[in-house]
Structure formats: structure tokens, C-alpha cells
Length: 372
Image 1 (spheres, one colour):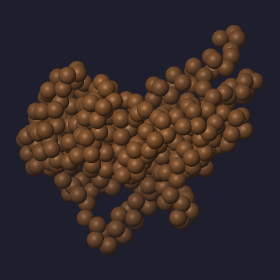
Image 2: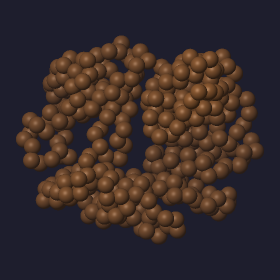
Image 3: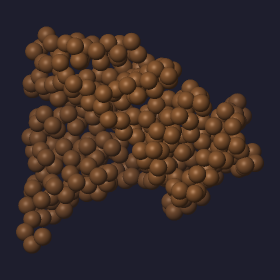
Image 4: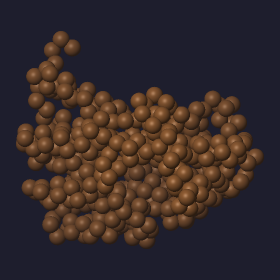
């Protein structure tokens, strides 16, 4: 562009953030180099990116900048801060950002309910919801989405179903696909796999691959290979090139020791040329994000990390650790299975973190694969 302005810069940063390029969204120095000052729109995008990457150090720096410019009092910025601190494991700082607000707003209350749910504080999320009416706030569809999420992640099945019905009957809100997906997750985590499947098949909105994958993930948790096979067929009918259902189904079959079924799933993947998305983990230290992938030797400390992992695994075994190789493919020998387990991306990230951070400092590792 021959002429740039704040709007153009904000659009580029927001587009990066919304399309999964969170690292790029953090690089907003181009605005300052061009003589532009970040505004409230900029801060919402870059704080959201810090939330996705769990880069607490950079998030705090950006928070300080927002305070200096006066943008920290904007509803959208506060909501982003609540989410960012929550995802970085700092629930107390989420609460602090929420309490320092200047006005009651349904967006902020919904964000705080979601933050409680993310940390397994289901009762606190429900208590906060119950305080909305007395302060004159009407819950909206986002509020109930946050509430259902909290109930799902805290094992509050009956409460969650009550809130789903309350949303429809009292608040006259029409559930969207996301609400139905939360209910499926709620049922699945509670072990009600058949009920979850029936709920999906009878719901009045169009199904997508995500809601079926949510049910498939529950089948993995509860090791139900029979229902998993039916669910996987529905996912693959909608998105045959998605690697997640193949991997989930293969893992479920492996845990049930159905090795023939595992081989068939792998053959279908090869025939359809489906490639498994590699597991990636990342960790922030000194405001720099380090990325790890199994088998990748490109990190400058790769050799040291490998040696540290061996020492750590040996010490863990002395203390009674036994590797769970149930999900590892059966055509590997025991030593190879253990090697793969010991070199998962998150273990590489944890080893690097232990090597490069002082004792007692929290370790925050982010992953790209949630369902698998």
C-alpha cells in the first residue's frame, strides 16, 4: 500500500489472529514504525493472540501498554484480558480484571463465567450467573454457552441440562449449534454416550463434523469402540480428509486391542492420502516462543533436551512410573513405543521449560491438538 493507516494495520492483525496465525498477530511493531499508535481494536486482537498462544509475558506487556493509552477500560479489551489471563493459568488476574471494571456488562460477565469454567470452577461460574439478575443483566446466548462449557468441564451434567432448558423456556433463546455441542460434550464426559448420540441425531439444527468429533472424543475417554465406529462414520461422511477421526478411532481400537481394526483404519488413511496433523507444543520464555514437534531436531538445544528427557524418564521409573503404551501402534517393539511416548511434543516442551526456568516458576505448555 502506498498509504497506510491504523485501520489497515488493525485489519491485517485481526485477519492473522482470526485465521490461526497468532504469532504474526503479535508482531504489531510495524504500526509503531509507521508512526501509528495502537488503539482499542489493536489491543483486542493482540491480546486475543496472546490468549491463543498462552504467552503470558507478552500479554502482560501489552496490558501495560493498554493501561498507558487508556484502552484498558474498554469492554472488549477487558474481556480479552479476562480470557488471556485465564488461558495462561492466572485465574486470580482474570478476577482482578473483572472486578476493576467500571460498569456491569453482560460481555464481561460471560467472559468471567467462561474463565471459571476453564479452570474447573463450575460452582463459581454458576454463582456468578445467579448474580446477573440482581444487578439488572439479562443473560444472552454467549452467557449460556459459557455456562454450559463450565458445567461440561466440571462434571455438572444435571445442572448443565437444567441451564440448557432454562435458556429455552425462560429466556426464550434459540440454541445454536455451539450450545448443542456443549450439551453433547456434557453428556459424553459423563459417560452417557448413547444419550449423546441420540441427542445429536434428533437435534433440530444441521450437524457438523465438530459435534460428531466431540462425541467421538468421549468414546475415547470411556473406551467404547462400538459406538466410536458409528460416530466416526458420521464424521468421515462430512469430512473424509480430516485426520482427527481416523486417529481417534485408531486409538480407541488400539486400547481395545482390536489390532485388525487399527490396521483397517490406517489402510483407509493411506488409500485416501490423509495425513495426520503433527502434534505441536509451544512454550514462552523471556518473551520468546519456542515450538516443539516429535522428531524435529531443529531446536538449538535439541541434544540437551534429549539427554534431559532420558535422565528424567529414568528417574521417573525409579519412582514407579510405568509408560502407558496402550494407544501406541502394536507393530512397534516395546522400546520404540516407549521412545515415542517419551518424545511427544509436550514432553519436549516440558523438558525445555525445566531446563530454562527457575525452580518454582509455573510452566505453561500449549498444544495444537485437543481432541486427539
